[in-house]
Image (cartoon, rainbow, N blue to C red; front, side, top):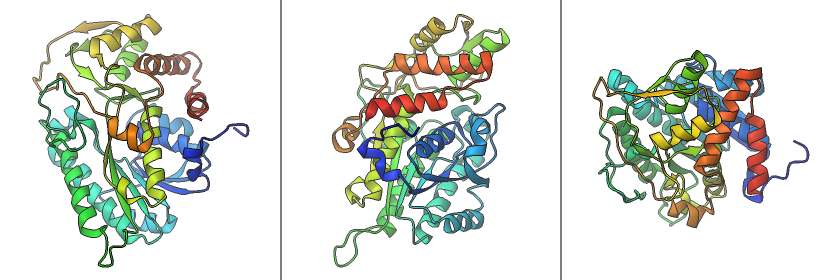
Length: 361
């Protein structure tokens, strides 16, 4: 680690205090490890991990923080004010589409009211200048067309998860306009908030239910076949490091006080690098022979998008961000992570982070 060369675009995080909600989750724990590699001081606030094993539990001795619910506004505010972060990354959420059908009220409470609590806490902490809220690619009104969705396109959501995240986008924009606008002297706001919309993120350490690669891996380990509902569905698969790199570049611009970046941003693969579910499965099988699948109709008949594509040109042009690992590389690294874990209980997390940083420098 001492010999690692940190890219100029990420040096801003060295010695910065970073508060992460949802740090015990799959993406939050990867973000924590990434930031620690950049020299940041990280503090997390989240519910305990809801899977066993969990990526967070593999590294919990390295990540400081506390267990707490973002719906507990008083504790959240107290935690942020005590740590006095330079920037907050808000990842805590109820993140599963099918779970939102079973628990619609809890999904809205966590995703919408929880986000409002984070915005309120951010507003009340004088030392904190920047907030990045993570939503999803599913915030758009999906018309099942081939055209990529741009950040200014209409928001919507067929299921309760997607609509709750679309509500978060409206909330974030409204809060920004209400409390973080230019003053009467036309001076820039001292607090900046942005939102990030990313697609289907993959990497090792995800054991969540009802996610494709975790389901494939768990079934392979148990010697079972994975039931696949919609093999022709197209998704913007990307490795978690590419996604987090985008978040960090955006957060860096917020930390630098650039108010034009206080907006919504898409992160995903290039438009010629989208895979169907079936294509992704076949590539997974190329790296792990034990993966077996069977195609079955959806017994619950829940709505599932067939085509979803993001336009990432805004992030490429203004943030100087671009995907580093294509989908094939993301799949290979993800499957190799799980194979390493199940063969010798070792992980490739820090290796992947180091390699990614070396690539982007």
